[in-house]
Length: 435
Image (cartoon, rainbow, N blue to C red; front, side):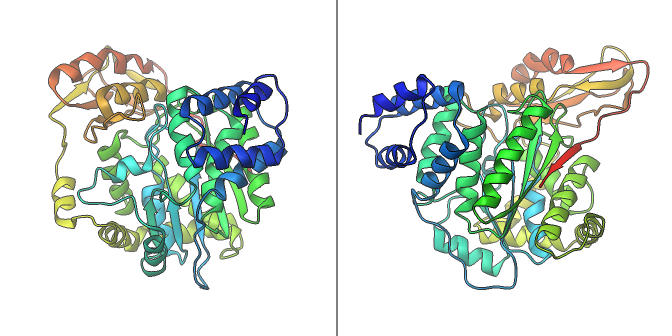
């Protein structure tokens, strides 16, 4: 294959034929196309885009680059959720066990962090002994036995996406609608799902900065998912403010467990319940969203999903005693510093992008695909818009590798917040639905 000619064609805005896309994915997966050339094509796609037909061809070629999960006949629908990524977005962690308790099977194939956004697998890697790389037969076995699993794609499952995913993060080509669509749906279609709910975020810390762009992405993914036989729906959510009150891998695990115990922040709880409710309606397990929300909330309050969480992580190799000991600690970082306001007032802005960048720079995210993650760093006790903070109060706490690293980011964290003498109503978290 003359791959250079395809780079040049896309650079000039020309369309690639389905067989060309299938060929380039096949050759790249086989190691016959170097990373630097694929990175060049990704950049051309970033600027020139892909047509609907090109995106469909890319998605299916990526799905078919490896194995597709096959499950036995079962009355429990196969469902999953995917988020386009955000700061403090740990919804997948409490949602998977909740869905299993609601009578679903959940083969949740997740990814690692992209840009400043956290990755679900990075959070699970903070749990002692928990394995996130499982062979396909074990994924199927755990889904059938436990009801849910959260893991990464195997080497033989959508290998094209695994290679491209890492290159996108390191080449500045993450915020591309066709590339996001192909990446997400290639993995989800390989799960053989009955239904899929997509959480498409917009705002300062989202890949889609505006609600209009998020809607375009949601529409593209919903249309393609439904066309490929998976009942797909999307919700649009605000990512100008971090989700919940904690961001950073281990801190988000702690907050997820609190959510499963009937505690945790209201916005996280609301998004978990809403995601479950949509899947109940999509699979006709509930007649209306209102009835589905009530069903999901009752299940979450029962404590059963908290037990299912323990069952899931133990099945994935976690040391439950070590996990619970770690869970009991206020912090696992070597330094914890409270960030104070210069004056009292009501929070009118809590910039998720600044907080995400701080966590990345503390070591909680990746600057390159080879970066080593510090799972203990992060920010918690985050004050949210609409809340009052006194001068002696706390805007947030920073967890860092040492006191010098913590002190170095305090001013940046202060700049993430705007305080006003008057309370302003915070915008709603969920701002639309597609499908």
